[in-house]
Image (cartoon, rainbow, N blue to C red; front, side, top):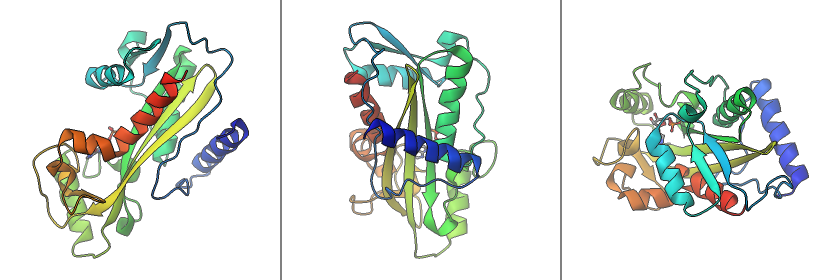
Amino acid sequence: MRQESIKLLNAKVKKNITSGYFFRTGFEAQTYIHEPSIHPNVIPSKKMEIIFATGNPNKIKEVNQILGDTNIIIKGLKDIGCTEEIPETQPSIQGNAIQKADYVTQKYQVNCFSEDTGLEVDALNGEPGVNTARYAGESKDAGANMAKILEKLGETPNRKARFLTVIALNLEGKQHVFEGVCEGHIAYQKTGIGGFGYDPIFLPQGYEGKSFAELTKEEKNKISHRGIAVRKLMAFLNGV
Ligand code: IMP
């Protein structure tokens, strides 16, 4: 995607965020990537640090492993002394990912990327969306969250849903957004014991009615929203 288009798209995101609309990309069943030209300040032979806006050391380790042998080092919030809660007050997944990355970049003057994920159920007008983690309350209880969705849907035949992950990267003064979508349906009941969160009630497209919780880690990574978004980020960073 050309630089001008990226600027326009980012402006559109920001406009929709500030005007309170739930922003959709129009790329409903697929993912997209902003592929900006490499900024002239990025010197490939130099070691470059990027902060992952997370306090979860496992996520940082995983991303560093996927990155492999490059000049990029991913570090976490602790490494820059950021221990405060980062604001996530936007009405969309995209908005929250951008808000988190911007907060860290502006306050700590660092290259940074953040990730935000949500589940959107068509028959529930896109709920739980930005409330995915806390759908049934502040305790972030996965069982209660799933029960709430199943109860709200009842026997509704329209079970269409999708997981969406957005990664916002601020690198050398430019912003890049990577999106991963996994389309599927909400089951009538829980199946499987693997995974986490809503996995037992999410039936990804193309897997013959199996839930995320019934897939192996490798199978899920191949098709999952997060797997897709992270691979796009890594492909971009590996090219820097
Ligand atoms: P986060 O933005 O990665 O923290 O995800 C927000 C919430 O979405 C989590 O608390 C989970 O409930 C849910 N979630 C994210 N990814 C998945 C997934 O792959 N399977 C099931 N639930 C997920």
